[in-house]
Amino acid sequence: MQLDLDIATTLHSGKRSFALQVACQSDSQRIVLLGPSGSGKSLTLKAIAGLVTPASGHIRLNGRTLFDARAGINLAPQQRNVGYLFQDYALFPHLTVRQNVAFGLKRGWSNPRRNERHAAVEHWLSNLGLAELAQQYPDQLSGGQRQRTALARALVAEPAALLLDEPFSALDPTLRGQMRRELSELQTRLQVPMIIITHDPDDARMLGQHVLHLRDGRIDAAPAAQPGPMPAPQLRPA
Image 1 (cartoon, rainbow, N blue to C red):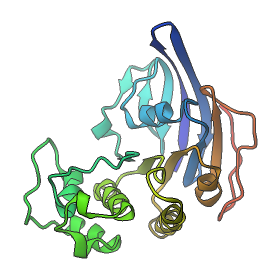
Image 2 (image 1 turned 90 degrees about the horizontal axis):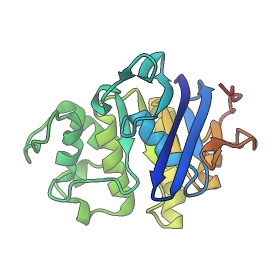
Image 3 (image 1 turned 45 degrees about the vertical axis):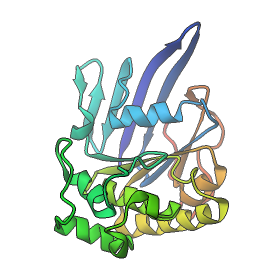
């Protein structure tokens, strides 16, 4: 994955304001944005996904321009070909596991039929160990099963990259370690690029090939990489 990110924006709330100014380049398959709450991690991830529009700058992924303020380019979220895993997984409670995954292939807001089968959906149900749970609803699943369902929904559309918003924060400590290992093994097996935001250094150590430290809306001058399972490419500030 090649990420070229150079964005700036300011948010206002009453008399308070928050300035985000993030610039970096990376060719890592696993990029982690690490920082405390309020550092600008979620805002940066949402800008990459197209859920927030920066005031200036550009976002390029794998040589494709997703946003460029000067050129007037701002692709809609559905045009960016990225999968977004929300912090609370955002599963539809009235849809089964199979329907939730199939929703990742839909255009528009019509619900997939309960008994409808699609080869790509069945592939990911099997791949992520969800086939036996396909007819269950989200409130019948464990935290890890809900996360795998959300991952399957994101992967079924064959995204160019996965964006993960605090993917383990809703899990208890024991399950968190297990899911870190599962996600690491999944990424290695599928070679799907990931951009992960987290406040937990253990996430960065386990999953980060390239770690960016965010603080107060900017990349910190702290070490840019954490020891992990794979070598960390060198950060090239833009």
